[in-house]
Length: 365
Image (cartoon, rainbow, N blue to C red):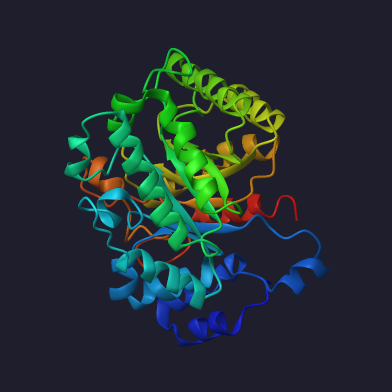
């Protein structure tokens, strides 16, 4: 049993009834004091989750569970452009600052997400007249945000989801204001601006849909490696690749293809993070026990393939509890039953997915 920090013990002691029974087994996700981790050997792979500032403020049980179980948190939306930079020349840091303060108070690391993405852009960004203006605004945004959290946010998803849905090569990048005005050069611009604002930060390119069998996914793996090589050949500051790992029931993990991709990433001397793990259960059976087992099995297939090639620097799920998840917004079940994509259910009880993550995060310990 992992030794709990005082705040973790207090949380578990104050939790009562069935919720207490569910949370009593969660201490394995608690951050271990460094001296205990070293004495016991290699520390487990750090676990973390995407969190919501609003839920942290309004739901005490959620706040306590995140503090008890996460060694890393990442803002689900609070550091995206639409939240933090809603108008030209106007920055709103209240929600992002709240998450940074929460992480500091609970001795949790916080990752930054995200600096250059096609999505979550405020309407004013569509007004860029030319490439020079787009570059100026992109660099100003990155310098302002990253400098504010320099020394506090040690890792950034600098570029998120750059590849087109079905890319032909490394320059088949997703349409966006950045591609429209700057072309592929927006990636080096973003990475260099981030490195300039915080030379100590670990810079990550975050991508999805590279795990499965099928021509589209094979094309995405090929284009991703080509893009990474292009960036490295140009001495662009890049330290890691984030695999989102939004897993879908009905798709099949391409173990050989995924492992070949990971081997190429390792050969480029880049780290690997699992950044947004969950399992979309839209098409799985309704029976809870059966569904939870299938969700866990799919995550196990993915994690087993990854961990056979590389020790991920972190495993993060896109949310901690089914009470707060993006999945039903886009993948609501036809039977009307709640989605169950995350390690804890809506009442904060651990599910088989929790056990799978625990197994693989300790695989190298």
